Image (cartoon, rainbow, N blue to C red; front, side):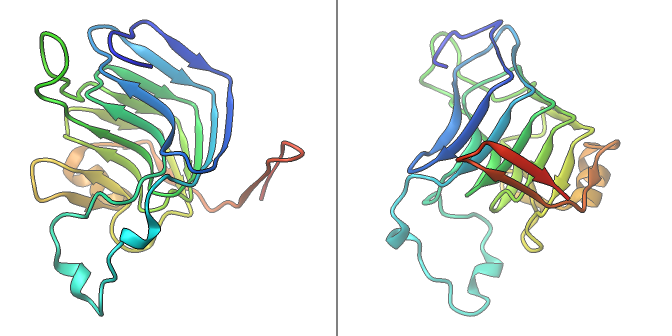
Length: 203
């Protein structure tokens, strides 16, 4: 959904098996009016990138870096200079890099740059999302009532990317330092979706 999209709704879809795909949903330069993404199943985005370009981190050398390389992708929802998204009641899972990633685009977009602000994430279930469930480019966004399952144990799966250095947080710190997801939770569940039969099991 490209520049000047507004008052749109993407609802009730099954987006599954993004083989060699950077993302399932690409939102570019939306602002001024809300766009709703709700009640979708967004599942298995493998990413489109050169696996051989990922540098090997010997020992604990990667622990002390303040920024990650932007080699990998594979996002459930990707925002490029997009404001005022509403992401509500979705299942977002099996994303190689993260469930949501967005970046600020300050110079390129029409009369003003895209600030990536005022995006709201309510009552979604994030499951097994690579490095992170949510990558907010700044803290001028909102998240509440979301559930997180099978998140990575290291590195912080809830992230504020700017200002540098990036904050990589778990749910407890996300609440304490950002005030997000005061009604959120960590869920102990297993989900499997068979993309051939389109059957889902939850334990």
